[in-house]
Image (cartoon, rainbow, N blue to C red):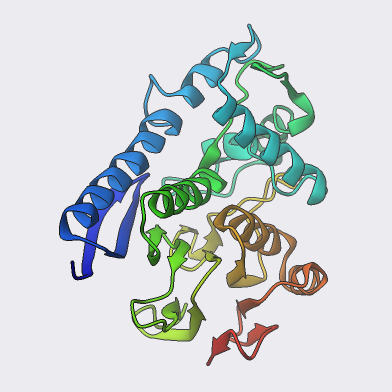
Length: 304
């Protein structure tokens, strides 16, 4: 029975997704493609803040009123998010989505400091009570948003499931959060392009991976224009203002979940502190600052 290559593109969690794999048989390959797609869509249904029936929406709707019962998967995501909050000194905060109410593509003028303060008053992981089977948001109008963890977690989970089903070559790409199942059929690594903020169709670098994961966080594709000034969509939960400094950060490590968290934290820290943070983590990374200057930690990983 000859090996067969399979490829699927679809949309989930608001992002373009792609699965590429080599299977021992055509039937197994197609089966794994479809089950992987279903799993990605399951995560979307379960955790999308745009769906009124999602777990996240139920938690947010009960803010300030009552705890909400959660399953082990949701608890694991919340526990991880809480750990990231502590490790980042409060910069990685899944309660900071309330700031989107005043900073968004429809914002016509810079928010008043009073508006920002009202949002910051209901922001903070310290206002979340997490128990083994329940979570409670202490204040009314608080909200959680898994946007910074769920795609990454899903990529890891789907790749693991594919390997359990007998797939050893391929990758899962959920909106730029990429988990490698295994190398290409001939053993060669996968070539993953990092977009150039000034010329998005041209890669700034190529990352070569035959295992592990890579995640890219950036400010150049999503932004706000207010009174002629460009502001990042990424908001600092301590100041309530858009972040400045780095345009793009790509991190490679064993899991997409960890890579995504590290790249997000680096962006939130700004240029100098962000680069220092990544260097202290001792992980391969590639970053581009607002001047277009490249920063990286591994010549073997990145080809400019």
